Image (cartoon, rainbow, N blue to C red; front, side):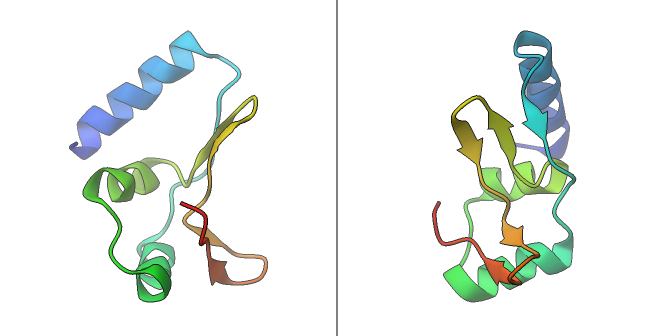
Length: 77
């Protein structure tokens, strides 16, 4: 999925589910750190993280690529 398509998809998701929460985009540094810890990420997931570093809607979550608090990559994809 291209960056433009991902942005449109997320915009449409927000229109359909106004309570969905998007996080700030993951930096290249954060994505690189995650790849260093867990290996290559699927391209669509990398594209999502360029637009939003995860999202949350009710009990559904796509976790951030990198958690800055303990400074470690997520291992729960």
